[in-house]
Image (cartoon, rainbow, N blue to C red; front, side, top):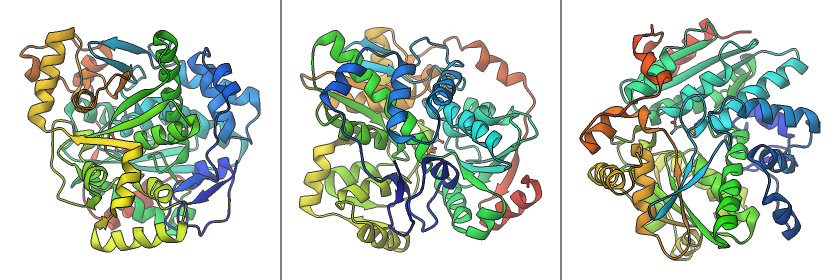
Length: 463
Ligand SMILES: N[C@@H](CCOP(=O)(O)O)C(=O)O
């Protein structure tokens, strides 16, 4: 499998090059040159595989340069830190299925891809005499998972930008209490969109990128998307096996469009089986407006109780746009350049219809989110984190006779203030989270200014 850019100006590259490149040099996002379609035999063969076996099979379709045994070892090592033998178990709770993605070391779905990516970096760097500087932005969960994935690893330094005081206290502590010298937390006085814009601009400065071997851990890195495809398959097989039903829907709390884009690829790879994806947003509803009205126009970011989704400019949207435009890289490039100036894209009726064949969407406000946590707990005894609650509310809105699989993207203990408020009482937190409060922290508060961040990197990057 080779990889190309959504903007068409990059010669095809290998998977390993893709992992290190992050953003394509032409400013586009890297995608596989084709989406493999699973055969009936493959589905039959895969349906009873364990999570680890399935992950290996999915990766194999996209990664040709890593020897079989090494890839298997990487998969095994990456998921050995998870607290559940099934890695991403799926449970029937009330009227929906909950796909628990928070059993990794930092209690969020990001671990599924980032523990793998951390090990993959380490594996590839051992083969080459090379040092990398990881630069990423987080609205709460990616940062901790990425830091955990690479802390203490040699030849890697990591710089994570998060919006100062706009992530939950536990999310912040999970990053700032990591004191390893190769970890740098930069608390930016701005929104996640500001952080992501700085990261992208620095990646677009090609001499700077090259000088410091800048590497991405956000979902602009295709390896992130790849690892997230696996749990859609895993959940599908578990549900179809237990119910005999052959068609399901997934409800996905959405911010940066990475997770749901992985679902989109899984849907395409399956051919039939995933009827539609429910794109659930909080009040930062640009993606819901896109699906429902073809209006992709940026508004001010609203801070909410589901902060990881407080995003207006979803970086993976470009990948979907490329497919919506019939894999027309020139048109994608033109649209994205226009968007960079006007902050707005409008779609035709025909395009909206096509989008709606892939997605249904609704935006869930904060009051509804709290009410959903409360009602779901009262009805089932199951605690939802605020992001999962957004997905469950949207999932219930579009629930029909098909199984509705709601992605539980974070553990409720990452948001104890919000969850306790919703259910009217406290609840016990896992030991790993409880003890964070007493630990020393390390972070720098910086202006939302690209040059300030550049200066910081110049001082602390490894070369
Ligand atoms: N919601 C994310 C934002 C970054 O998204 P990513 O999937 O591109 O890493 C977060 O929690 O940081």
